[in-house]
Length: 82
Length: 130
Image (cartoon, rainbow over all chains, first blue to last red; front, side):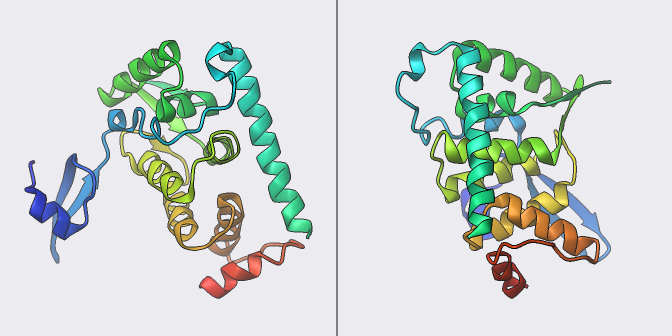
């Protein structure tokens, strides 16, 4: 169903999309439903790509990400010991 | 129905659209999930790894992290394991300056009527939150 932008603002739905409407005994409940395809590239303009990223192979990128996940875990662990 | 357990790199690829080939493949699979042909399962361990990769490798700030992970976890077209606990953890993450993993650990213990056994004094912040 389509909801006018003024109503969307009123309900606090910041993203355009579909909603689930449930009619129950104590009222009508409207909940936004996130379409999974709207997640594609949601952070495209937010990421800071590391140097040389464009020239890296897929496996090199994955290895770099695995290393960053390991680093993130280690940072969390070291912080917990302070 | 075929079930696919998503790995970290496919979810990161979807969110940041980092590489055309990968993005095309990921979008095709997600479109199939949207159409109900397959089911994509996301386990909390992988979501935590997505969090660490976005944080450590791509410098995603807290607001954008919350927005993207919350959207991912809330999607009813995905089978997100422990969805309600993850959503609760993300709501707290928005307000408390702590690692998502710390919050998730704390909530998991709390939901099991237990406490966290840790030397980390930051976990006290969470006790104050409740």
